[in-house]
Image (cartoon, rainbow, N blue to C red; front, top):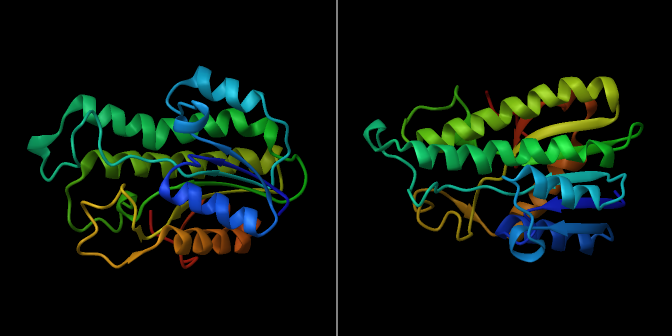
Length: 221
């Protein structure tokens, strides 16, 4: 890998991915809301930032995400469902990565291997959902998984070497998870970054459109 574009590069996982790639000698372009003003929920912002770049990139990694919407925490019950909060969840967790993918197409090679990856979450798995709750976050991540899967089918025709994947990083010790990680084994962002980049390195064209955890194991839809 020679060149990578990381979206959400100022977050816990994103920043760790940038650091790991730089350590590996990869030329990294880092974009985030706090540093470069990229708003992934605003198509004009996404278009302007990505059109200013020159490809091709070997890796485009969307490391953005949000558990809260409109100031509301994940719901414990359907009674807590709030339309504005759910819309916010979809804007950040599904629409944002979809807009990045749309406008990143010119930055991906037409020939040769490249990976477009986005952070998903195991709770976005419909088949693995045994606890309920968190309906907005679960639904937004499930929708993201569908975007990745559908895009992979299209890219197989136009960008034959590009692999699309949704990735579950495990529970990572970041401000994102600090209020929800008590019952889970956690890893440091640096460990998560290393694990995710190893997963990415091992992906094959047959894996495109898939959903994988940090151990390279497929996650059920």
